[in-house]
Length: 101
Image (tube, rainbow, N blue to C red):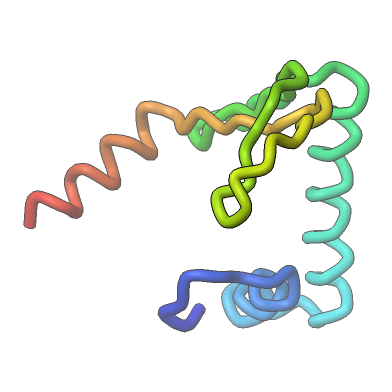
């Protein structure tokens, strides 16, 4: 994978293709299936844990009054679901180890 901050599904599939030699089409199907499973788990239970990676949780934010900073006009922000991610200890340790060098 190249050194960039944003990755597309195709980038991940290309990396799998390069590492494992599967066809690009099969790799893209594999990546899409994994993402679909995560999304479906969040829809049904609101929580998905990936061992040694982290956990995703859907939480509700209440409606509130916000302010447009440009016009200073008060606006009602509606209630909505937000996605929170908590990285695993292994990921945090790996990130912190790399920052020490």
